[in-house]
Every structure is written in structure tokens, then in C-alpha cells.
Length: 57
Image (cartoon, rainbow, N blue to C red; front, side, top):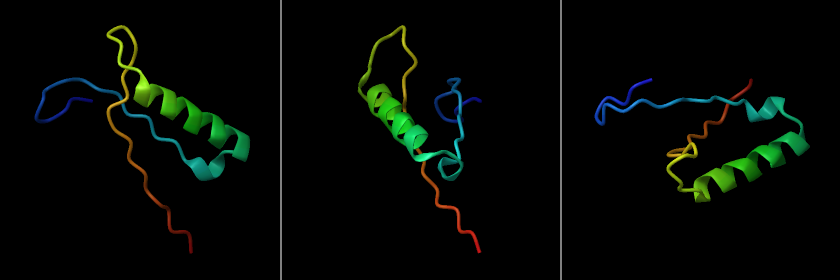
């Protein structure tokens, strides 16, 4: 994808947390925490996290 304003390329990853077991959810949250802290030029950088609640009726 390409950012409209900055004209830079980025990747999007969508994960449905409700479909993961508790252990995988905790593992994913740990990885997100680590990626937020890392700021190295040769490592993928995490810029933004979007969380949406799914209303199931």
C-alpha cells in the first residue's frame, strides 16, 4: 500500500484476535510490544496499531 500524504510504501497486517487462543494472543501482544520499542534502520518498524471491536449479534 502507499500512504496518501507521505507517498511512502507500507504493509498492513490484519489479525482477528478472537480467533486466536489465549497463548497465541499473549505471544502476539509480546511481539507488538517489542516491535514498538525497536528503532533500527534494518528492522521492520511498527508505526501504528488499529484496534477494532467486532459486534457479534
